[in-house]
Length: 130
Image (cartoon, rainbow, N blue to C red; front, side, top):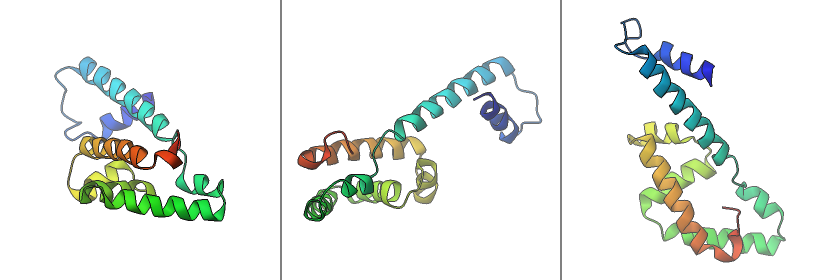
């Protein structure tokens, strides 16, 4: 985490200029880096869809894929797009935010809400998996 804070400090625009409050900046940067690490750990707790499909018979996998297609079609187009980019294409939230010209926070909120909505739609298949 310490390394991340100092790398961010070096990459910061106008890093050559004196900061008004180095202590408060470093404190905030440390908090943000810690939150990023926690978010990353939480994101890795999800089980990959391919792993779920591999645990089921061929018929159950086909049913799951069909149910997922149907559930994704019920989403708002933007939510479906972001979910697909995140979980099927493997892009990170910052990458998606840059691609779509929106904030990382908005991407994270949409991903969270979409996963919650898909859990409801796929209740028979999801359990703790999505």
